Image (tube, rainbow over all chains, first blue to last red; front, side):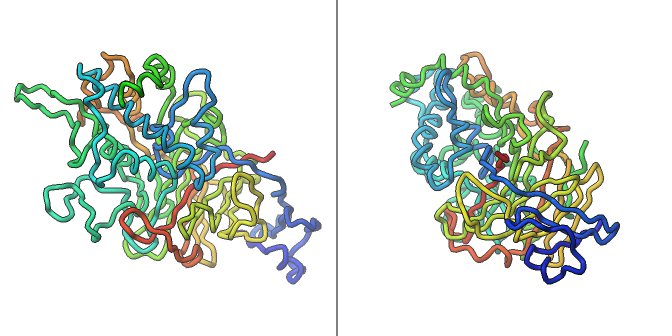
Length: 235
Length: 230
């Protein structure tokens, strides 16, 4: 079913192949179907108001929180334009990030005052990280390979996962198989080496002494393709 | 600082909050969760190394849980891919997609006459259309080299999100060890489908970005929105 379309302006020029367009606000669109000659008019009129927003995956869901009886912050995030997001959400994101650390301090029997966010593998402190994340957009580089982040690569062999020194390629988009949850967890809980809370057995008794917070333990389970549209057929 | 934060937020309040289901953007907020306008996910990538195209994948809806809207593109929902070129976080180009009578129509990329929370369909800038697929993908490629797809697909998102909810629960006995090791962890989205809209477009149609990311690399700053007809 191959369709050919014309803009409203072109419709006047190409009137011999187009019929039925009589609306003057361009909200009615006409086309001719070259296969079955099924001429018809399509109505695209109206005003559309924003319902949902997404840039970086998992940010609103993990760093926004709703309190019982209070207006929903998650809803507000979905109907705020990106240029206003940092002012509206950064402080709450930072508080939430610290709160996650408090939860694990208590689970470990430690004083929450002693278990805090530590600067992550990008060297970002909590305020800077949450400032970056509060503006919820996905950055994609037109001229570079795409990687959301590759937390397993020590690009410059300095023993650190990534110390930006100008020659790394990262934060250039999101592929279908990028493990964005693990990346987020590493940025939230991994500290400077990316493995701060990764289930370490500190006393060699065969039992983990620190929680496993830097990976959720799963990877891609679906079929993806190198051919458009790249996603696997529905199950 | 931690003590004061706990005082402000209160652990009892947390329990209510954290009962909310969480995923990439699937079911992310009360008003949009489970509706036909619920954005499940968003991807943007270079299809092959050295390609001059960019691929945008927008996943709407999900059948990962029962009782969610899934399976039909709502004709009252306009999906917009927003592209900021200069880094001011205001869209400079938009690509629109909206379903009509079994087809997905695409418009743009074009500079919006109005930015922000309210939109109209830019019918002067038809990009192309494609028949909405069933289980077999139907793909359209325009004369400009733009590839278009709309239809149900496997949801490629992966996350052990039930364990995540246990991890962030303030209950002291809830997942004290954190996430589960590989082999014990389970991808909650394994077997789930989503309603996908896929556009592959030459970068030359989007413009040259002056925005940069945290590493100083030139990037488009992109986001997707759904917008309901009033």
